[in-house]
Length: 370
Image 1 (tube, rainbow, N blue to C red):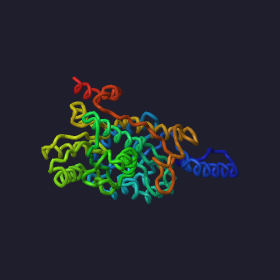
Image 2 (image 1 turned 90 degrees about the vertical axis):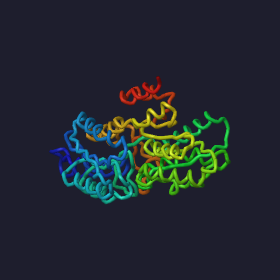
Image 3 (image 1 turned 60 degrees about the vertical axis):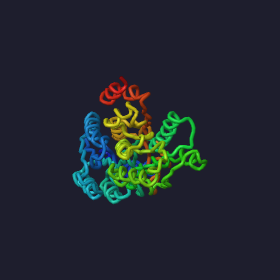
Image 4 (image 1 turned 120 degrees about the vertical axis):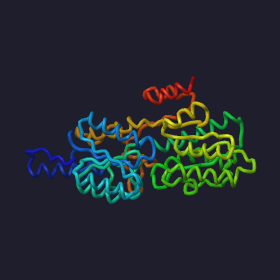
């Protein structure tokens, strides 16, 4: 990314190119300096709190190597604090990594590191989770997370209607961590579908907990979601009130919610999920968990690497980048140029087809369909 401008240009020409580069960044979010094949790309991942993070390292190493870049892929330390990731990013800057891809532990607390990266001439790419309240991020690569929330809400409705033709239905709502920029986008997408029905009385939330702060799950920790679900059951459903469905933002939390319900001796309601974790596919195939969302980690990593490749090839506007998606890519300071991927809703009915490009998940789906 710090590649020198073409040798042989006059000082005047260099000035003209530099001014053009700055103008391009203002319009597109692109970095001031160039990237070339062979440069080192740093990928700062959070701790291994879910299966998709475990898969991400190998996906990036493979994609970056195949594209001709050097890969510096790191996880935050096992205790998974923001300071771990701050140090991780600072180390990449110090080592001279030319691109910094950040999958944020807490996107609101990495602005200083993003600014340091930009000062060093690096291109900063938010991956899977946006960086918040900073102008020092050039691109954002992720699945359409607002659509993820909408798909989860519609799956919840479809699953409940399949069990009981008419409502009103009793539901409970869970969201991800308030430190994760995606969690609010998932929640907002889901509530765009659910809230009008709640307002009409077609859906009821017996616990009364509907605001994001009431339903968020600290650190995406399944212990926290299991405890909250158990508390809700004790206070709200121990009198015989039926629970028809639970909106869960991912598979890990979904399984913890199912555990809480089963431990209470209640029938398992319709439970949604996300990430297509291997532990949840058998549950979907046997009807315990209703749905998940497939977001292919390999494809997401390849999308980021394709963007970097476009920049290395001199494209001022990389392929597939949207510069005006405020819903998914607004970070509080700017609308980050955004490369979106399309999520896939998966239920028992379409699991084998949905996972046809993933041998591991396809095998699990086929095994469960017998």
